[in-house]
Image 1 (cartoon, rainbow, N blue to C red):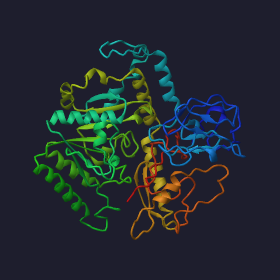
Image 2: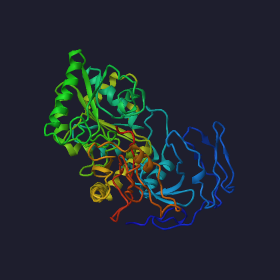
Image 3: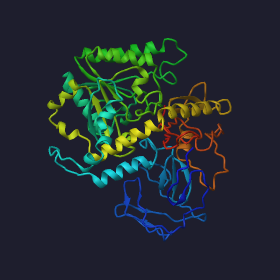
Length: 508
């Protein structure tokens, strides 16, 4: 493993004294209630912070120099005390108390925090690039002149895709790209209805939020133009792996739902889906099933949109793109901010024929989809890192290591109901009982908010009442754990990739 030297001599794995009482300059703190504190002078460690728009955020230090016990919960993202990270590099982060943490939440840091190649590309672009708000002013920037061969981003990205995906349009987020994908499919087919899988999430904008069942409240009725089909969940779904006809039953159920809409004279523009169902407990469909569903929906004249915001660029291992693992070629591909390692960069790739529908999308002008010099520079740098550091192969290797390691714990930890995944998207299903497979949300919640402070490193966590089992280090009893990023902190040629962990505690 490479030893990345973090700022102020922080080295992954090295035990450091608390820096809670160090003199530090202004440190920007954002409370996830929505109030942003302008800053605080950490040279006064007992100073309280008063936001202009919200309540006081107490940051008083305890006897160990840690602010952890006095943090005010920030309820937008966390029900309990959030961490406050002051710097990070590779797969490691450091909080304000000097605690070193393995980053298991960063879903967009595709090649790790502050990768030197990405930083260098961003610095060069920001120092040299001409910026213009006029999309029709075809100005040649300094970047184009000095490092022209390095920043042909779209051709490089399209070279990794099937030949039919030969047009790339650049946006700033997966939500924007999915919104445009829906509009293209409707304009191209002349139809309006959209098919999605249950529990899916494709963005937070108006249209894509409407096709994201994961955001629905219990009393929310889907729009009449949104058709929701079941996820083929063989673990906890209506039809399970014990039934040899389970997949056939799921397919017939899907056809019945769609046929009901066809009988109402509804016409479908597209199916939008991820290669694996990340928001449905990381359920991985059978290859033959996905091929069959895609073929059936195409027979209705609808397009296939593959949302690879969370799965693309090597996270699933085997190939650079998740759809390639299923031998499916989509009509439209969407990828998001991981392309820029967190920098606002998203790409929609499609065919020339479908892209011509842009002329009918009056909301858009084709010229606005050209990448900025910064987007091109960072995007190319991320591609370079993924290729040069063999992060797709690393995702396979480390993902297999994680799955095998957790499977080895199943005999002694009865709360682990299932381990599944592809590459570094790994799901660890937590249950209360192996017979009923009833999920363990309280146990998942205890893990979601658990981090090992120096005072607690020798402590032991118990699971739900009656379970009493801790799983290991930073993962203890998850309802579902997802490890993000093609890189991982393991002894290998590269540790620049970031891993991520998400607990879903609403499984029912």
